[in-house]
Image (cartoon, rainbow, N blue to C red):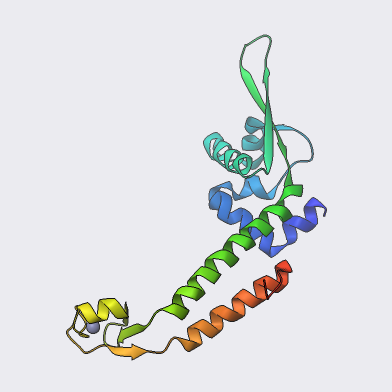
Length: 174
Ligand SMILES: [Zn+2]
């Protein structure tokens, strides 16, 4: 996928935004083709050098950028030359989706294997054990708590799990 296509994809924009935050977004959204220094990026984008460096380091930690160090022979200063590797984005996104799927499946199992009680006054939910400890009375307001049906929540979670599995081509029986 070309850089432009990647960066026009709202899922990828959201992913980058979550990684680097709003201050780092100008850096993440404008990957140059070749090598670039942090100073060049800061000047080009009109950003603080520290914000540029923070964004670059986050990209580096996520395998989306690498750098090499070059020492200036006259001044002795080290320059960092950065290269963006956005071809790794699809793979990173897939990993994120697997993580999300695991978390959802775990949560779904928790919902399926526990009983819940609700205080309708405070909208607080308790696990069966907690509700029993409190004598089936809300510890906040003293109202009786009622057995709560979480079928709709479970159904919604089940649909999300199924959708993710389809997107990832995970065998549903697996
Ligand atoms: Zn209450």
